[in-house]
Length: 68
Image (cartoon, rainbow, N blue to C red; front, side):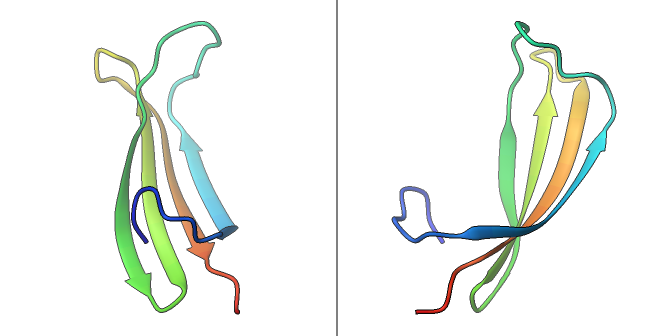
């Protein structure tokens, strides 16, 4: 799995922990990173902090590439 890849994926499991509200109209950052990959399964992490670095949301997702 790489950035810009045309491979389709399906989110199977999404776990999210809200620490602080994400307010509409305010600027936020988004960080994402790979956690693990095994065959067609890919686990990724996502964090949404404020521009000052205060963490608002922390998530983990399991993506699965469909069988061909």
